[in-house]
Image 1 (cartoon, rainbow, N blue to C red):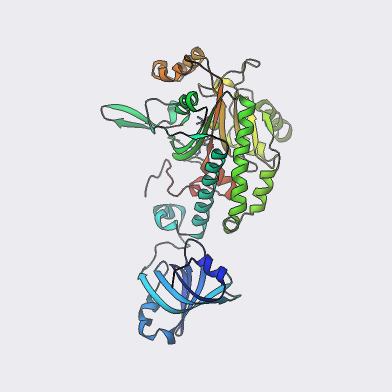
Image 2 (cartoon, rainbow, N blue to C red):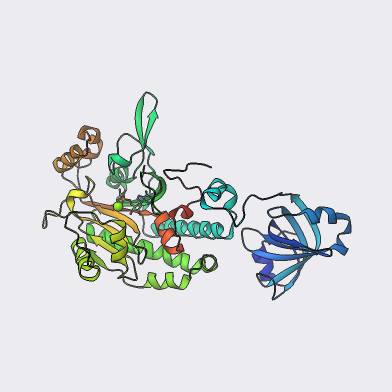
Length: 430
Ligand code: 4AD
Ligand code: MG
Protein backbone atom coordinates (compact mmCIF):
# COMPACT_ATOMS: atom_id res chain seq x y z
CA UNK A 1 0.00 0.00 0.00
CA UNK A 2 1.01 3.59 -0.63
CA UNK A 3 1.83 6.00 2.20
CA UNK A 4 -0.60 8.85 2.62
CA UNK A 5 -0.37 11.90 4.87
CA UNK A 6 -2.24 11.99 8.16
CA UNK A 7 -4.48 14.73 6.78
CA UNK A 8 -5.33 12.51 3.80
CA UNK A 9 -6.01 9.58 6.11
CA UNK A 10 -8.42 11.71 8.18
CA UNK A 11 -10.13 12.80 4.97
CA UNK A 12 -10.48 9.16 3.92
CA UNK A 13 -12.14 8.54 7.31
CA UNK A 14 -12.49 4.76 7.04
CA UNK A 15 -10.73 1.65 5.76
CA UNK A 16 -7.07 0.70 5.50
CA UNK A 17 -4.37 3.36 5.61
CA UNK A 18 -0.57 3.48 5.84
CA UNK A 19 0.98 6.54 7.45
CA UNK A 20 4.38 7.56 8.77
CA UNK A 21 5.69 10.19 11.11
CA UNK A 22 6.94 10.92 14.60
CA UNK A 23 5.49 10.27 18.04
CA UNK A 24 3.96 13.46 19.39
CA UNK A 25 2.70 11.91 22.63
CA UNK A 26 2.39 8.35 23.91
CA UNK A 27 1.08 6.40 26.83
CA UNK A 28 1.08 2.69 27.49
CA UNK A 29 -0.50 0.03 29.63
CA UNK A 30 -0.15 -3.72 29.88
CA UNK A 31 -2.48 -4.24 26.96
CA UNK A 32 -2.28 -1.11 24.83
CA UNK A 33 0.05 1.52 23.51
CA UNK A 34 -1.60 4.80 22.53
CA UNK A 35 0.45 6.93 20.15
CA UNK A 36 -0.36 10.36 18.84
CA UNK A 37 1.46 10.30 15.53
CA UNK A 38 2.54 13.54 13.88
CA UNK A 39 3.55 14.33 10.34
CA UNK A 40 3.79 17.67 8.56
CA UNK A 41 0.07 17.64 7.83
CA UNK A 42 -1.64 16.83 11.17
CA UNK A 43 -1.73 14.49 14.18
CA UNK A 44 -3.71 11.29 14.72
CA UNK A 45 -4.22 8.84 17.54
CA UNK A 46 -3.05 5.28 16.86
CA UNK A 47 -3.78 2.34 19.12
CA UNK A 48 -1.62 -0.77 19.24
CA UNK A 49 -3.03 -3.83 20.99
CA UNK A 50 -0.47 -6.04 22.66
CA UNK A 51 -2.26 -9.22 21.55
CA UNK A 52 -1.55 -8.35 17.89
CA UNK A 53 2.12 -7.49 18.45
CA UNK A 54 3.34 -9.99 21.02
CA UNK A 55 6.62 -10.59 19.13
CA UNK A 56 7.45 -6.85 18.87
CA UNK A 57 6.02 -5.70 22.21
CA UNK A 58 9.31 -5.10 23.98
CA UNK A 59 10.31 -2.62 21.25
CA UNK A 60 6.86 -1.00 21.13
CA UNK A 61 6.88 -0.64 24.89
CA UNK A 62 10.17 1.32 24.62
CA UNK A 63 8.81 3.85 22.13
CA UNK A 64 9.12 7.42 23.37
CA UNK A 65 8.30 10.88 22.07
CA UNK A 66 9.83 11.70 18.65
CA UNK A 67 10.57 8.09 17.61
CA UNK A 68 9.86 7.72 13.89
CA UNK A 69 7.50 5.03 12.62
CA UNK A 70 5.41 3.63 9.81
CA UNK A 71 1.98 2.37 10.76
CA UNK A 72 -0.55 0.39 8.76
CA UNK A 73 -4.05 -0.04 10.10
CA UNK A 74 -7.73 0.79 9.92
CA UNK A 75 -8.95 4.33 10.47
CA UNK A 76 -12.28 5.16 12.08
CA UNK A 77 -14.05 8.03 13.79
CA UNK A 78 -13.37 8.34 17.53
CA UNK A 79 -14.76 11.28 19.43
CA UNK A 80 -12.23 10.94 22.24
CA UNK A 81 -9.19 11.17 19.94
CA UNK A 82 -7.55 14.61 19.59
CA UNK A 83 -8.37 15.06 15.90
CA UNK A 84 -11.54 12.94 15.99
CA UNK A 85 -10.08 9.82 14.33
CA UNK A 86 -8.12 6.81 15.43
CA UNK A 87 -6.06 4.23 13.58
CA UNK A 88 -6.09 0.71 14.96
CA UNK A 89 -2.70 -0.61 13.94
CA UNK A 90 -2.11 -3.95 12.22
CA UNK A 91 1.55 -3.41 11.38
CA UNK A 92 4.25 -1.16 12.74
CA UNK A 93 7.71 -0.50 11.41
CA UNK A 94 9.98 1.36 13.80
CA UNK A 95 12.40 3.53 11.80
CA UNK A 96 14.28 5.48 14.46
CA UNK A 97 14.14 5.29 18.25
CA UNK A 98 14.24 8.44 20.35
CA UNK A 99 15.28 8.40 23.98
CA UNK A 100 14.63 11.21 26.47
CA UNK A 101 13.76 13.92 23.93
CA UNK A 102 15.23 17.03 25.58
CA UNK A 103 12.18 19.27 25.22
CA UNK A 104 9.59 19.51 27.95
CA UNK A 105 7.19 21.94 29.52
CA UNK A 106 9.60 23.05 32.22
CA UNK A 107 12.15 24.58 29.82
CA UNK A 108 12.64 28.31 29.90
CA UNK A 109 13.13 30.50 26.84
CA UNK A 110 16.91 30.23 27.03
CA UNK A 111 16.96 26.42 27.04
CA UNK A 112 14.34 26.24 24.31
CA UNK A 113 16.60 28.59 22.34
CA UNK A 114 19.55 26.21 22.76
CA UNK A 115 17.35 23.38 21.49
CA UNK A 116 15.69 25.36 18.75
CA UNK A 117 16.51 22.67 16.14
CA UNK A 118 14.30 20.27 18.10
CA UNK A 119 11.71 22.81 19.25
CA UNK A 120 10.84 23.49 15.60
CA UNK A 121 8.84 20.25 15.68
CA UNK A 122 6.36 21.70 18.17
CA UNK A 123 2.80 22.38 17.05
CA UNK A 124 3.33 26.09 17.71
CA UNK A 125 6.50 26.47 15.65
CA UNK A 126 5.13 24.24 12.89
CA UNK A 127 2.03 26.42 12.62
CA UNK A 128 4.12 29.62 12.45
CA UNK A 129 6.46 28.16 9.83
CA UNK A 130 3.49 27.12 7.69
CA UNK A 131 1.94 30.60 7.89
CA UNK A 132 5.29 32.16 7.02
CA UNK A 133 5.69 29.89 4.02
CA UNK A 134 2.18 30.67 2.76
CA UNK A 135 2.71 34.40 3.29
CA UNK A 136 5.91 34.47 1.27
CA UNK A 137 4.41 32.34 -1.51
CA UNK A 138 1.43 34.71 -1.68
CA UNK A 139 3.76 37.68 -1.97
CA UNK A 140 5.59 36.09 -4.91
CA UNK A 141 2.22 35.44 -6.52
CA UNK A 142 1.21 39.09 -5.97
CA UNK A 143 4.29 40.55 -7.62
CA UNK A 144 3.98 38.22 -10.59
CA UNK A 145 0.40 39.28 -11.09
CA UNK A 146 1.44 42.94 -10.82
CA UNK A 147 4.09 42.56 -13.54
CA UNK A 148 7.18 43.07 -11.36
CA UNK A 149 10.62 41.56 -11.87
CA UNK A 150 12.41 39.82 -9.02
CA UNK A 151 15.85 41.35 -8.62
CA UNK A 152 18.63 39.83 -6.48
CA UNK A 153 21.43 41.87 -4.95
CA UNK A 154 24.62 41.40 -2.88
CA UNK A 155 24.57 40.79 0.85
CA UNK A 156 28.18 41.97 1.10
CA UNK A 157 28.16 45.70 0.47
CA UNK A 158 30.79 48.48 0.43
CA UNK A 159 28.88 50.97 2.62
CA UNK A 160 26.19 51.29 5.24
CA UNK A 161 22.78 52.51 4.10
CA UNK A 162 20.53 52.80 7.16
CA UNK A 163 22.89 54.37 9.67
CA UNK A 164 26.38 53.39 10.74
CA UNK A 165 25.45 52.50 14.29
CA UNK A 166 23.71 49.24 13.33
CA UNK A 167 25.94 48.03 10.53
CA UNK A 168 27.77 44.68 10.76
CA UNK A 169 31.34 44.92 9.55
CA UNK A 170 33.02 41.85 8.08
CA UNK A 171 36.55 41.14 6.93
CA UNK A 172 36.61 41.08 3.13
CA UNK A 173 40.01 39.73 2.08
CA UNK A 174 42.30 42.65 2.90
CA UNK A 175 39.58 45.23 3.31
CA UNK A 176 36.23 45.74 5.05
CA UNK A 177 32.69 45.07 3.84
CA UNK A 178 29.29 45.39 5.48
CA UNK A 179 26.33 43.04 5.65
CA UNK A 180 23.26 44.39 3.85
CA UNK A 181 21.08 46.68 5.95
CA UNK A 182 18.75 46.98 2.98
CA UNK A 183 18.42 45.93 -0.67
CA UNK A 184 17.22 49.37 -1.57
CA UNK A 185 20.27 51.13 -3.02
CA UNK A 186 20.76 48.30 -5.52
CA UNK A 187 17.02 48.06 -6.13
CA UNK A 188 17.16 51.70 -7.14
CA UNK A 189 19.84 50.92 -9.73
CA UNK A 190 17.57 48.25 -11.22
CA UNK A 191 14.51 50.44 -11.84
CA UNK A 192 16.27 52.21 -14.70
CA UNK A 193 16.24 48.88 -16.54
CA UNK A 194 13.24 47.03 -15.10
CA UNK A 195 11.05 49.84 -13.69
CA UNK A 196 9.21 47.63 -11.17
CA UNK A 197 11.31 45.35 -8.98
CA UNK A 198 10.99 43.40 -5.75
CA UNK A 199 12.99 40.99 -3.66
CA UNK A 200 13.12 39.34 -0.28
CA UNK A 201 16.37 38.59 1.46
CA UNK A 202 18.27 38.33 4.72
CA UNK A 203 18.97 41.75 6.18
CA UNK A 204 21.33 42.61 9.01
CA UNK A 205 21.21 45.16 11.78
CA UNK A 206 23.45 45.18 14.82
CA UNK A 207 20.64 46.23 17.16
CA UNK A 208 22.32 46.93 20.45
CA UNK A 209 19.31 46.58 22.67
CA UNK A 210 17.23 43.58 23.65
CA UNK A 211 13.63 44.08 22.56
CA UNK A 212 10.77 41.81 21.59
CA UNK A 213 10.65 43.37 18.10
CA UNK A 214 14.22 43.49 16.84
CA UNK A 215 16.36 40.78 15.28
CA UNK A 216 19.97 41.08 14.18
CA UNK A 217 19.16 39.07 11.05
CA UNK A 218 15.70 39.36 9.56
CA UNK A 219 14.04 39.02 6.16
CA UNK A 220 13.08 42.21 4.47
CA UNK A 221 10.68 42.10 1.54
CA UNK A 222 11.48 45.15 -0.57
CA UNK A 223 9.98 46.91 -3.58
CA UNK A 224 11.19 49.76 -5.78
CA UNK A 225 9.26 51.44 -8.59
CA UNK A 226 10.21 54.05 -11.19
CA UNK A 227 7.99 57.13 -11.67
CA UNK A 228 5.80 56.57 -8.60
CA UNK A 229 5.35 59.19 -5.91
CA UNK A 230 4.50 58.85 -2.23
CA UNK A 231 0.72 58.47 -2.64
CA UNK A 232 1.06 55.70 -5.20
CA UNK A 233 3.67 53.75 -3.28
CA UNK A 234 1.75 53.88 0.01
CA UNK A 235 -1.46 52.61 -1.63
CA UNK A 236 0.50 49.85 -3.32
CA UNK A 237 2.09 48.78 -0.01
CA UNK A 238 -1.40 48.43 1.46
CA UNK A 239 -2.49 46.38 -1.54
CA UNK A 240 0.48 44.01 -1.19
CA UNK A 241 -0.11 43.32 2.47
CA UNK A 242 -3.87 42.98 2.10
CA UNK A 243 -3.34 40.43 -0.69
CA UNK A 244 -1.00 38.34 1.46
CA UNK A 245 -3.30 38.55 4.51
CA UNK A 246 -6.20 37.31 2.40
CA UNK A 247 -4.24 34.28 1.22
CA UNK A 248 -2.98 33.29 4.67
CA UNK A 249 -6.39 34.00 6.17
CA UNK A 250 -8.04 31.71 3.64
CA UNK A 251 -5.47 28.91 3.71
CA UNK A 252 -4.13 28.83 7.27
CA UNK A 253 -7.24 28.79 9.47
CA UNK A 254 -6.07 25.64 11.31
CA UNK A 255 -2.61 27.08 11.96
CA UNK A 256 -4.03 30.31 13.35
CA UNK A 257 -6.28 28.27 15.62
CA UNK A 258 -3.27 26.41 17.04
CA UNK A 259 -1.80 29.84 17.85
CA UNK A 260 -5.00 30.99 19.55
CA UNK A 261 -5.85 33.36 16.70
CA UNK A 262 -8.89 33.60 14.47
CA UNK A 263 -8.22 33.71 10.72
CA UNK A 264 -11.56 35.46 10.26
CA UNK A 265 -10.16 38.56 12.00
CA UNK A 266 -7.29 38.67 9.54
CA UNK A 267 -9.70 38.41 6.60
CA UNK A 268 -11.85 41.14 8.11
CA UNK A 269 -8.86 43.49 8.46
CA UNK A 270 -7.81 42.76 4.87
CA UNK A 271 -11.21 43.90 3.60
CA UNK A 272 -11.28 47.22 5.49
CA UNK A 273 -9.94 50.57 4.32
CA UNK A 274 -6.56 51.34 5.86
CA UNK A 275 -6.05 55.02 6.71
CA UNK A 276 -3.12 57.22 5.81
CA UNK A 277 -2.28 60.00 8.27
CA UNK A 278 0.58 62.42 8.64
CA UNK A 279 3.16 62.28 11.42
CA UNK A 280 1.77 65.62 12.63
CA UNK A 281 -1.72 64.03 12.88
CA UNK A 282 -0.20 61.17 14.88
CA UNK A 283 1.33 63.68 17.31
CA UNK A 284 -2.09 65.29 17.67
CA UNK A 285 -3.81 61.97 18.42
CA UNK A 286 -1.14 61.19 21.01
CA UNK A 287 -1.61 64.55 22.64
CA UNK A 288 -5.43 64.69 22.53
CA UNK A 289 -6.22 61.07 23.36
CA UNK A 290 -3.20 59.93 25.34
CA UNK A 291 -1.95 63.14 26.92
CA UNK A 292 1.53 62.56 25.47
CA UNK A 293 3.25 65.63 24.16
CA UNK A 294 5.99 64.98 21.61
CA UNK A 295 7.78 67.90 20.00
CA UNK A 296 7.96 67.81 16.20
CA UNK A 297 11.31 66.41 15.19
CA UNK A 298 11.49 63.18 17.17
CA UNK A 299 10.92 59.73 15.67
CA UNK A 300 8.13 57.80 17.41
CA UNK A 301 9.27 55.34 20.03
CA UNK A 302 7.78 51.88 20.52
CA UNK A 303 5.62 52.97 23.43
CA UNK A 304 4.25 55.89 21.40
CA UNK A 305 3.53 53.69 18.39
CA UNK A 306 1.67 51.32 20.70
CA UNK A 307 -0.39 54.09 22.27
CA UNK A 308 -1.22 55.53 18.84
CA UNK A 309 -2.32 52.20 17.40
CA UNK A 310 -4.70 51.52 20.29
CA UNK A 311 -6.97 53.89 18.37
CA UNK A 312 -7.06 51.88 15.13
CA UNK A 313 -8.32 48.44 14.14
CA UNK A 314 -6.38 48.20 10.86
CA UNK A 315 -2.81 49.02 9.87
CA UNK A 316 -2.18 52.73 9.39
CA UNK A 317 0.26 54.45 7.06
CA UNK A 318 1.99 57.39 8.73
CA UNK A 319 3.69 59.79 6.31
CA UNK A 320 5.85 62.95 6.45
CA UNK A 321 8.15 62.22 9.39
CA UNK A 322 10.62 64.96 10.33
CA UNK A 323 13.33 65.17 7.69
CA UNK A 324 16.16 65.72 10.16
CA UNK A 325 15.90 62.29 11.80
CA UNK A 326 15.36 60.30 8.61
CA UNK A 327 17.85 58.28 6.52
CA UNK A 328 19.89 60.27 3.99
CA UNK A 329 17.92 59.15 0.92
CA UNK A 330 14.51 60.34 2.15
CA UNK A 331 13.70 63.57 0.28
CA UNK A 332 12.59 66.84 1.75
CA UNK A 333 9.00 67.81 1.00
CA UNK A 334 9.23 71.00 -1.01
CA UNK A 335 5.93 72.21 0.48
CA UNK A 336 6.83 71.62 4.12
CA UNK A 337 10.57 71.78 4.32
CA UNK A 338 10.90 70.14 7.73
CA UNK A 339 9.06 67.00 6.55
CA UNK A 340 10.32 64.08 4.47
CA UNK A 341 8.35 62.26 1.75
CA UNK A 342 8.44 59.01 3.61
CA UNK A 343 6.15 56.60 5.43
CA UNK A 344 5.90 53.82 7.97
CA UNK A 345 3.04 51.36 8.24
CA UNK A 346 2.08 50.46 11.79
CA UNK A 347 0.07 47.39 12.81
CA UNK A 348 -3.07 47.73 14.94
CA UNK A 349 -2.99 47.05 18.70
CA UNK A 350 0.63 45.90 18.94
CA UNK A 351 1.79 49.08 17.16
CA UNK A 352 4.61 47.24 15.36
CA UNK A 353 6.26 49.10 12.50
CA UNK A 354 5.76 46.57 9.72
CA UNK A 355 6.81 48.68 6.72
CA UNK A 356 9.19 51.55 6.10
CA UNK A 357 9.48 53.37 2.79
CA UNK A 358 9.76 56.65 0.93
CA UNK A 359 10.17 58.55 -2.26
CA UNK A 360 13.89 58.75 -3.02
CA UNK A 361 15.88 61.93 -2.91
CA UNK A 362 17.20 63.14 -6.27
CA UNK A 363 19.28 65.87 -4.63
CA UNK A 364 22.95 64.82 -4.55
CA UNK A 365 24.04 67.83 -2.53
CA UNK A 366 21.49 67.31 0.22
CA UNK A 367 22.24 63.58 0.41
CA UNK A 368 26.00 64.26 0.60
CA UNK A 369 25.49 66.63 3.49
CA UNK A 370 23.33 64.20 5.35
CA UNK A 371 25.88 61.41 4.85
CA UNK A 372 28.70 63.63 6.10
CA UNK A 373 26.71 64.35 9.24
CA UNK A 374 26.52 60.59 9.77
CA UNK A 375 30.32 60.32 9.45
CA UNK A 376 30.22 58.91 5.93
CA UNK A 377 32.35 59.82 2.94
CA UNK A 378 29.95 60.77 0.11
CA UNK A 379 32.54 59.57 -2.44
CA UNK A 380 31.77 56.02 -1.34
CA UNK A 381 28.25 56.55 -2.67
CA UNK A 382 29.26 57.68 -6.14
CA UNK A 383 27.53 54.68 -7.76
CA UNK A 384 24.31 55.75 -6.07
CA UNK A 385 24.71 59.37 -7.13
CA UNK A 386 25.31 58.25 -10.74
CA UNK A 387 21.69 57.11 -10.76
CA UNK A 388 20.77 60.80 -10.33
CA UNK A 389 23.08 61.91 -13.13
CA UNK A 390 21.97 59.78 -16.05
CA UNK A 391 18.28 60.10 -16.78
CA UNK A 392 17.13 60.50 -13.20
CA UNK A 393 13.42 59.92 -12.58
CA UNK A 394 11.24 60.14 -9.48
CA UNK A 395 10.94 56.76 -7.81
CA UNK A 396 9.78 55.22 -4.56
CA UNK A 397 9.99 52.03 -2.59
CA UNK A 398 9.55 50.31 0.72
CA UNK A 399 10.57 47.34 2.80
CA UNK A 400 8.29 45.00 4.75
CA UNK A 401 9.68 43.32 7.85
CA UNK A 402 8.44 39.78 7.29
CA UNK A 403 8.96 38.74 10.91
CA UNK A 404 7.15 41.87 12.12
CA UNK A 405 4.11 41.00 10.00
CA UNK A 406 4.16 37.44 11.31
CA UNK A 407 4.59 38.62 14.88
CA UNK A 408 1.51 40.77 14.45
CA UNK A 409 -0.80 38.31 12.67
CA UNK A 410 0.27 35.30 14.73
CA UNK A 411 -0.04 37.27 17.98
CA UNK A 412 3.52 36.43 19.07
CA UNK A 413 4.98 37.92 22.21
CA UNK A 414 8.45 37.93 20.71
CA UNK A 415 9.65 38.37 17.14
CA UNK A 416 12.08 35.51 17.74
CA UNK A 417 9.28 33.02 17.17
CA UNK A 418 8.59 34.46 13.72
CA UNK A 419 11.86 33.02 12.38
CA UNK A 420 13.18 29.47 12.68
CA UNK A 421 16.67 30.28 13.97
CA UNK A 422 16.66 33.77 15.50
CA UNK A 423 19.78 35.90 15.63
CA UNK A 424 19.87 38.52 18.36
CA UNK A 425 22.45 40.44 20.32
CA UNK A 426 22.73 37.49 22.71
CA UNK A 427 22.29 34.52 20.36
CA UNK A 428 23.65 33.23 17.08
CA UNK A 429 23.48 29.47 17.85
CA UNK A 430 22.36 26.86 16.88
O1 4AD B 1 12.31 51.04 8.12
P1 4AD B 1 13.50 50.31 7.59
O2 4AD B 1 14.79 50.51 8.26
O3 4AD B 1 13.59 50.70 6.04
C1 4AD B 1 14.58 50.37 5.20
O4 4AD B 1 15.53 49.70 5.45
C2 4AD B 1 14.34 50.85 3.79
N1 4AD B 1 15.63 50.90 3.11
C3 4AD B 1 13.38 49.94 3.10
C4 4AD B 1 13.06 50.40 1.70
O5 4AD B 1 12.57 51.51 1.55
N2 4AD B 1 13.32 49.58 0.71
O6 4AD B 1 13.18 48.75 7.56
C5 4AD B 1 12.03 48.28 6.90
C6 4AD B 1 11.26 47.36 7.79
C7 4AD B 1 10.79 48.01 9.09
O7 4AD B 1 9.60 48.72 8.91
C8 4AD B 1 10.60 46.79 9.97
O8 4AD B 1 9.35 46.17 9.70
C9 4AD B 1 11.70 45.86 9.52
O9 4AD B 1 12.08 46.28 8.22
N3 4AD B 1 12.86 45.91 10.42
C10 4AD B 1 13.19 44.96 11.30
N4 4AD B 1 12.61 43.78 11.60
C11 4AD B 1 13.19 43.01 12.56
N5 4AD B 1 14.30 43.35 13.22
C12 4AD B 1 14.94 44.52 12.95
N6 4AD B 1 16.07 44.82 13.59
C13 4AD B 1 14.37 45.38 11.95
N7 4AD B 1 14.71 46.58 11.44
C14 4AD B 1 13.78 46.88 10.52
MG1 MG C 1 11.83 52.27 9.82
